[in-house]
Length: 595
Image (cartoon, rainbow, N blue to C red; front, side, top):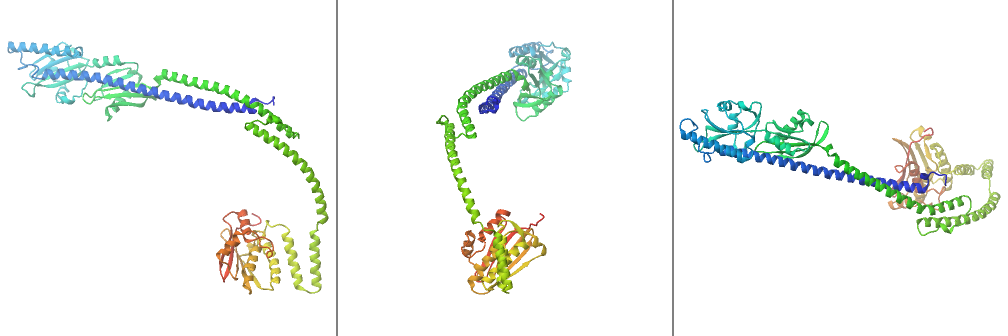
């Protein structure tokens, strides 16, 4: 026992089994904690991203509304008294122009976005204009503005859903800059006419500033309706074509915002976006899921700590419990060794109140029983030897019986008594065949020869009361294998249950043929027939009827033997008509000697 390796002992196995369970439970628990915690962390990150994007989008929408309010106030006749825009004709008009210009400047300053308003201008189609804004004016500003290809498109937009676009700064002082233009018709005569327009161009730096305030290392992008990016932060993390594709897909999305998992450049990312239906401004943020590594590592460390803790506790408990089991198991092992060496004395120490004690009581009981059996075995062996002597003394040599029958047959031959000769020859053949056993397989030819001996005896017994006609479909079937003593009980039943009760001569027909891969044997008699109840009684009573059978093998036994050897699809079937006939069909698989 001491030389055995620890993992081959019961104690070692208990420790390993317990550790396996503990490791499995700890692993599943740790992984479950890890995945659930990481999932929760991911959900919180998604919620934070959505809130951040919604906040940025809301700030942009506030700026958009403020810009729209400024241009609408400047183009509304009730807010500003324009009269004629030809300010050079009359001193009063010049004075009004100065007042209007000051008012426009006040609008810009009050809005809080004055530093981002590049140009605020009121103009007519004759080239007259007043303007304000952070960019100085020029006499060519009106001409440069009206000659752009986008001015008239912007003037036709609805104020209720004015979607922004980005254009090159058309003015000389702002060449190379990008502007977001808003153009509205001037309300001169109480209706929106095309006699004048209001123009507000504000810088994209407004969006850049907001992104810088919200920047925490992830990629942020702001785009307008046509897909033009007006501001971005940390866009260098992804290829330009990927960002363009992302912008296009989000602009075409049916929803106005949300968060999704997408794959960019082979990396799983979270994408949160918000799209304003009035301004057409799209804001989205891209965060690689791998960037949540700090929280991920913290959760992983927690899971590893839980796993190691469970492992250590499980190991300690396994060692403790296995030590408690080791002593009674050792006692049982020692008792088994003693029994194996022939010592059947009992050991009361192995009988405790637990399951191992039950085993100990069983071993002690077994020891007492074995001792008793050994004593009895010695006595039985002594009796057996005495019995063998008596059996040898009483044994009759079967050859003596065969030789005696042969002598009787020769005496009958000498005396020319053919009936006795035939009877003795048939009986001798029956005895020799029956002595070989019942369940071996013989050829159909051998079975028919055995049946012939039986019929010879029965015909003499019943004074030629019946005839037997045998037909075999083809010669090769004589070599087919059949279970010995299959046909004799069928013919026996035809004699005793069919012909004998009728009290008159009858005939038994035996037909053997092949159907597909089956050997079919039909035994038919023209006797009294049987009712369905009689058939059931015969088939359900496997016991032989005393005094009227030769082999003691009834029809149920024939059917049972066939099914045991060949399977349930083979066996015996009885068909009968009272007063007319009884036919028994036996089906077997075709089987030859060389198969």
